Image (tube, rainbow, N blue to C red; front, top):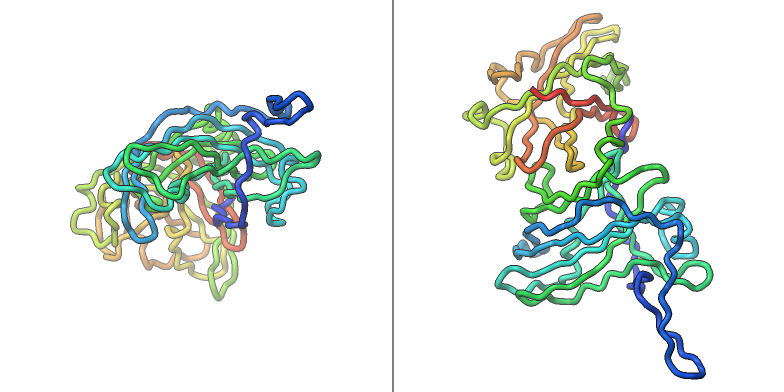
Amino acid sequence: MRLSSYLNRAVLGAVAMPLLAGCAGEQGAGGAVERAAERPASWTDLPVRTGARSVVYTDTDHQSYKARITVKGLVRGSEEDMRGARVDEELKGKVPHYLTFEVTNTGRKEIPAAYLVDSNFALNGTDWERGEEVYVSGGRPGGVDLPCADTAPKTLAPGDSYDTCVAYALPEGVGVLSLTYNADGYVDASGAVATWPVEGGLEAASADLAEPGDIVRVRWDARDDGVLELPATLVSVRRGSAADLVGLDLDLNENERRGVPYYVSVNYTNTGPKDLYADQADHVHLLTEGGRQIPGKTPFVLDAKIPGCPSDWVARAIPPGDSVTECSIHLVTDDDKPFAVGFAEAGRPGLVAWRAPLH
């Protein structure tokens, strides 16, 4: 299965739009008349597991604030919703998804620029792509406003809350795996996350994954020898122990030191005409149920011995026709779980992936 890679967040410049889910006032001859805005039949409520999660928001000045995020609903809109709106060309034709949630300041400090608290949110597609956060201006045909408005205040005092809505765009045919928020306040692939799963998302994401032991041809850049297609097989995914890594030079950050190591072993065959200095670990990602892609690490010491993760392949030439099994180390927080293994191919966007057999 091929999985799309993460997209960068697009800042498109916007104005806030009124929530279509509310009521609109209409002035008639007899005075003000209230009418409920109609909900388009094309919208679909998605079965997201709602509820509150405690998080930390860190601003651009590296100041941290305690908050509570309560997800209230997720609606898949229609491609029609963005027609007539001023959005980037690359977003046209994609499907908007409307996330409503509440933010509460649970700390003792006022949160400045409260509208940025949602910046740590991610809507993860069933192809492990992050949805683009969409800032739009202009309405839909017929004069109806877009159904999502960012109503965050400029500041948020301790104990105060606000409700808001953020729109994300996904390609047609891609479902939602989960919503995640960087729970410790930092954008880090191995950091703690708060997760709101979407029912059926995990099943959809796994529908076309290769099985462990299946041979998948992966594209690898052999530099002077060009791009080679190497037959690759996922051998194993093993849960390790932090004690395994004591004394190893792995260049771990604080989040990774608190994480649980998983050892991913993949077998490759050299189909090229020359010796191959295989070093594929940088291309291997451990995919989690929370929708994260966690890159691999390898020891810098050639004779390092890690139970369940052999490293004797480092800097070794593989003759034509021979095979090698390489192991990479992936640090995962206890609040998430590995689900698949992906390989980032040379010259192609996205990943090819196997289902992860945990041991």
